[in-house]
Structure formats: structure tokens, C-alpha cells
Image (cartoon, rainbow, N blue to C red; front, top):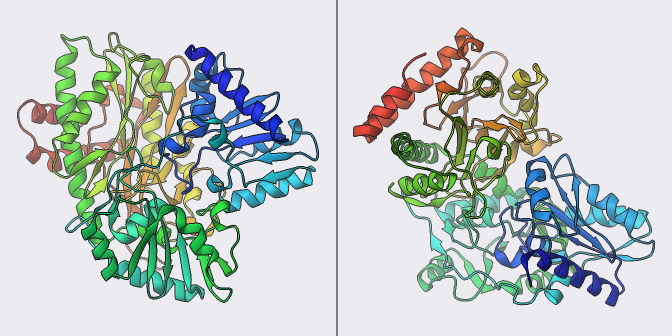
Length: 596
């Protein structure tokens, strides 16, 4: 069967299964039993069924129709990948859109059931979906994994071994973290606590894994009591020595598939602390105990990096910055006499990072987009689809690394030859947005979404906007996207309060389809600002260390304070990175950090 016929055949198979089982529709979210952003192959059902490879989207099918719901980051990619599939692309404004629910209600006859695998549907999302469907005379069927019935040779559970995150990179012991979590449980009046989000689990137990691409995590659930607990993982993943270490901290191990039975076995007098946005409906069905619903205490705790962790991260930023300088020095030289492509950028930049001590892997798939490809925020070059950097234009590189002492994420744009005035203007406006937020002071506890407009204001003034958030939290040798803070257009919630120690990206952008894309990104750390009579204030310490290409800028658009910030930043980059470099890389750094 040809590739162009594979997806229609899979969709037809799913639709036949709906008819055979008397179901009205099927909903396939981009999710797994841990509600992860990046999925193990076993739960890439939306990708397998639709052919769309973007990280976020929702697929809905009835017996006659199929539609994929994606936000603006993925529209161009989705149009290309869905071509000829028979699947309609529905363009939504954000990943949080409920347009798929409206579509299901419109196209599913009243009285019929909408099937979705409850094991990958968040408890909070399941409640909202059930309510919306029932109002429209529809039924939610969450007990059936229809993909398991139509997906031949579906991948099994990942088998990569679990390993310990040890000092000096791990700065707090497992026993200390467990003790603090139990104090939080006690404050909530809980006798037990369920953790299913894999980054919370890894952070709490000082363990890491390789079950998900780019994120050093493993699949598991933890049921914690006030005296002990049980870690549910697949057999063979936990080495014997680590199992013994966990036992010393009161943590037993059990089979991954036994978590639901253990929850069902909790007695009626037990009080289970759970986060309805971070556990699935399928896992928590059948509970006899009393639920206490609140955000996971670990989600809040791990977002606030300690002084010792911040020190580790600063060192990692120096390593990461030095690796980038070595790459860019090579790149500029090689570009003069070699035919380079976006694939070469990915290969050589990754190789330079791999030379650094403590490097574990990339923190996400490198985005190297030349000219029009840079206008696709989640673009990735492949051997089948890439651009050659063989003419003047703008190159966008968004990349990052996982190190034992921290996680990095940086975006830069680089002028290849002479740029048009429009491109320079766009680059300068994006930089102005970055600087506006980077220099902001704000009261401690400010809700992160309230800061979003500060970065957008210089772009809004010119009638320009971008479709993604301005900033996401970043983990400590964990997920490159972490909450609870989110500098975005999200509706603010109490747990999004900005606190000391949080690491967040600042990454405004401008995207002109078919022409170019601009994004400049630094990671920043929340640190105390000078005290005053109006309470505690915070400001940002810029962590990322890499020059910003002044050849991309229309310098006349920068005011004196913006020029001063950029010169001071480049002086700090030079001071911190120069001792780690020599030869052409050092010369490149000196040239690229000259004052403007």
C-alpha cells in the first residue's frame, strides 16, 4: 500500500469499528496515561491514525467524517501532512480550544456515544467533556480503547532503565523531598497522594529515565502514604540497587499495570490527594476513598529552584553557550566554501553540545528554519523536507540540551548575507519585546499571564502579534516545558503566581508565512529585586549566554536604554564564555560581542 493510501485506510478501519460497535464518534487526543506533552510511541495514536506529526492536536472521527484540530503553530505543517488523507483541518486559535467538542456535537446524532480512551483523558477534561456531551444528548464512552482494536503491531511499553540523579547535580535528597511532601499532604488532610505526571515523579524520587524522547523521565505512578508508598513501573526497568535505595526510603515497587487496582483497594476512610488536571479519568474510576482535589504540591515545589540548583544551572549555561560559540564559529567558516543545509545545523550543533561534561541529550528536536521554514514555529528539517542555506536570508535556530545540572532552551536568528529592511525591522521589534519583559520588575506573586502583554507591546504598537505564548517554565534536568507558571494569554489562575527561583523562557516572535520567521529566546530566573515600602518585588536574571546577532537589527530603532542592555548583556556573555573558548571560537565570540 502506498503512503498516500495508508492514512485513508486507517481512518476507514476506525470508522468501520465505530459502526460495528454502535458508536457515534471517536476522539483521539495527543496524550498518554501521564498526560505528557511528549509521548512514547505506544500512545502516538493520533499521529498513527492521521499522519500528522506535530506534537499537539486532537483528532475526531464519525462514521462519515474526520477532522484534525490544530492551532496556528501547526497550520502549514498540518495542511501539508493531511493532504490527500480525507481529514479536514480545523484551525483553532489555541491548543486549549474546545472546537473539537462543538464539532462532535454537530456531527454525532443525538443518543449516540462518543468513544475516548479514559486512560489518556485527564479527569478534569473528562468532566467537562461529559457535561458538554450530555447537554447535547450524547453519551461519553471512556471505557474502551478503540485504537487497541484497530492498531496492529502497536508498540509496547518503553523498556529503557531507570537511573539515579545524584549529587552534586541532585542538590536535595529523596528523603527530604518525601518528608516535605508529606507535610503538604498533612496540611491538605490527606492520608494518601497519587502522582502520575512523570516529571513530578522523577523530581520527587531523584530518578531519571529515557522513556520519552528529549525528556529524561520514565513512565510510572506513585501512590504515597504517610509512612510508605508504592512506585508502579514496568518490570525490569528498575535496577536492583535502586530498588533497595527506594526501600530504605519506604518506597516499594509494583507492576505498572497494578496502579488502578491499588487505588480501588484504598479503604473508604482514606483521603486521597490528587490533581484532576494531572491524573486521568480512567486511572481514578472506581475509587471508594474520599478524594481531595488540589494541584500537586510537587508541581509547585519543583518550579522553584534552590540556590544550589541555580548555581548548577549557571554553570550549565556557560557550557551550553560555549558549545554554541564553537558551532557558530565553524558554521560561519564552513558556509564560505561548503553547501550547508538545515540538517547540517542540527548535526553539528548537537555534536558540539555532546562534547560538554554532563551532557545527556537534546531537550527537544532542534528547529533550524531558513527563510520561509523559520515561519513555522514547530518546524523540523527531515531528510525528505529541508532547505539548503545557499542564498541571503534569515536563519532561525531553536535548540537546547539536557545536562545533569540543568536544561537549556535558546532561540537565535542569524543573518545569512544582507537582509532586507523589513526583516531587520521584524528582528528589532522582537528584540524590543524581549528586552521590555527582561527588564521588568513586578510584585512577588504576580500571576504569570499578566506579564505577557509587556513583551507583545512593541509588536502590538505596529499591528503585529504571534500565536504562541511568550514564556514557559523550564525544568531542572527535566522537561523543557514545565508549569505551573506560563507567560501567555492563558486565563490567570492562583497557582501561576511568580515566585523566586522559577525559570521561564521569554520568546516573542514574528512569523510571515512564505517569507521568514523571527524568534529570540532567553531563559530567565526570578530573583528578588531591591526591597521597598510596597512589599517584595522580583526581577529577571538572564541565564542564557549566547550573542544576539546585531547584523539582523535595525539599530536606529533601539533607544539608548535598549542599546545599553544589549551591550551589557554581550559584555557578560564575553566575560563568562571567554575562559571556556580558544582559537576561532574565541575570536568569533569577541567579534560578536562588540558594543554597538
